[in-house]
Image 1 (cartoon, one colour):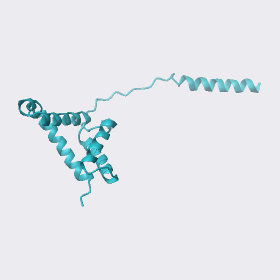
Image 2 (cartoon, rainbow, N blue to C red):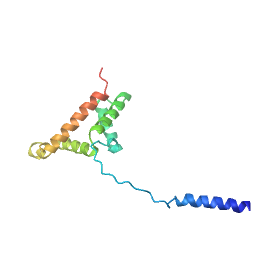
Image 3 (tube, one colour):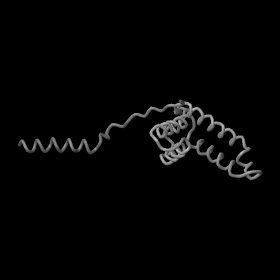
Image 4 (cartoon, helix red, strand yellow):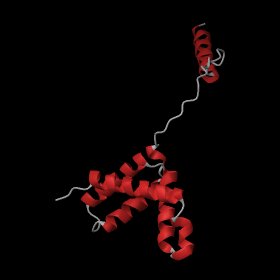
Amino acid sequence: MRNNYFRAVVGSTLMVLLSGCTTVPEKTVESAPVETTTTIVNDYPTRDRVEYVLNCVAQHGGLNYINQYACGCKIDKIAEKLSFSDYESAKTFTYLSKGQTGDAGAVFRDPAQSKDLRSRLKEAEASAEKSCFIKP
């Protein structure tokens, strides 16, 4: 008798756990869509963050703890100000406008979008440089 009771309790407990309590429908609350203008800080792929840090370390005299930490800080500060899409576009415009001269480079240098993104990136990098690097 005791074994049957135990089996019944264990069996019904397992049934409840496995069924996931789906007998009560969840109430959904509909709300108006919320638009945000904040930049997602973690949308930068790790590969791009590492590439930025390595280039930054090379520009600041080589690998040491101070440069590595400051360069990691710098890309985090940039990520706070620019989405990865804007960062990537700004870097592309920068590379391509410097790589070609004359009319061929004008396509990348002259559009308003290019100028805006390049200036936003430059401002973000300058601000991050001031925030992250210790000046003697």
